[in-house]
Image 1: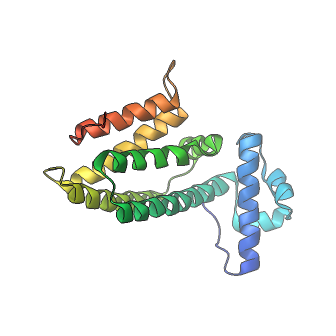
Image 2 (image 1 turned 90 degrees about the vertical axis):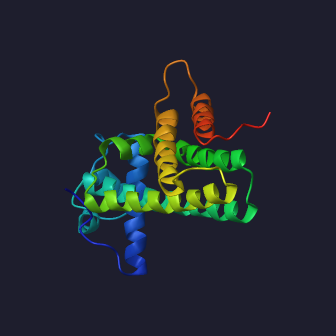
Image 3 (image 1 turned 30 degrees about the vertical axis):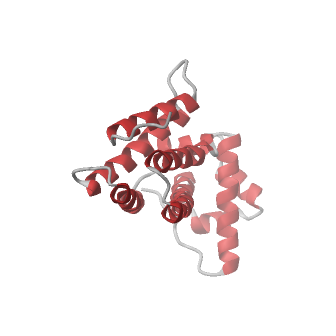
Length: 205
């Protein structure tokens, strides 16, 4: 499994690493994964091919690193929203809608790269563990709201995890692969309606 050779330890190295990743993201989106080459990526980043290979042995390693960056960005954005939800303590429907709409916005950003990450990015054990840890963290926040709202879930811990996993899968499909004749917005709204019904939350009229 191709992963980055090493991680930057100094500020200048971090800047080079980030420039290479950003160049890879841009070219994977504009040229496609197959057409983009490490030489083209190095040229776009303004570094030598040797500098690129110092960190990344091939394109799979670049894609893996982009996946890591995506998970970190996703976690950061969701943590900010969850902090706001804890502070505002909104009613049930608004809580669920905020969760789903935030996930939808994040999935809607850089759709081509997002699809590439899901379809082609290598997923070694450590990457899977990072995703599970993110889901567990989000589930903990959802559990907090299930208990706060006293929705009567028999097992709030399990229910919260299932809500997070279902929301991520549903939003991913709604944004990147909506069925023929349906818009992404319609699919997201349907997913929200299903979640509200499953939790016994009556939508506001």
